[in-house]
Image (cartoon, rainbow, N blue to C red):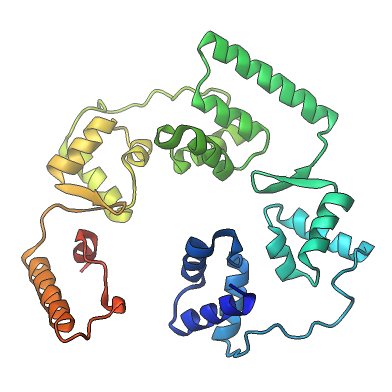
Length: 308
């Protein structure tokens, strides 16, 4: 699919008032890495909202895009220093340089390579080598003694100035659902950045964590009402309650279950049942004369009716 085809798709979806993030997700789900970057989609979506009609690039003034001058090298350096997570495609969008020239500047002139979606120097400094060896030896000793834990990874990676999102992604890629939630990683990473040394939980005052009192039930109800996308692990982080107690409150006392990552009532109300029947009859009436289309499909699971 050509660049012009992508831009035409963005133009049509923007005219339908679809947000740039959704347009990008649609393109990426089909074309993967060949799809334009989110920043490119946002830029073109903004242009079309402002009234632009053309899908072709305008003629760019200035030097040829194949030059690797000191000015171009400095331009790439400043962009990467400002945001080391930029891709080459995003650098193309922000400069007059071609893909090949940007890659040449990054690898040959700046001596950089990309690790975990961030540009880093190819060669570590002496301090970085020493620190890496020390951390590896420390982790190896803990592993051999059987005292090595997931929380040690957060401690070490935070000390190396790695962002919480990257730490979470690293843990999830290895441990899957057993990894701590992003919110947990962010919370502990913040504590370690602020100087905390201990990795054990502090003693929590108050009632035993196994109680299902009316106060605890109300607390969970308020949290879910405020953010129905919370997981049980995140509710654990925000309360003094255990996993089993929270699950029992949600299922037995609040009568909720989770659908598409949101808690909804188990039973539909009379209005929701009536609405479901009405919509099914409406779709059936459209289907029989042949006027039913793919665009008539809507979300029909419990979550939608709960919102209604």
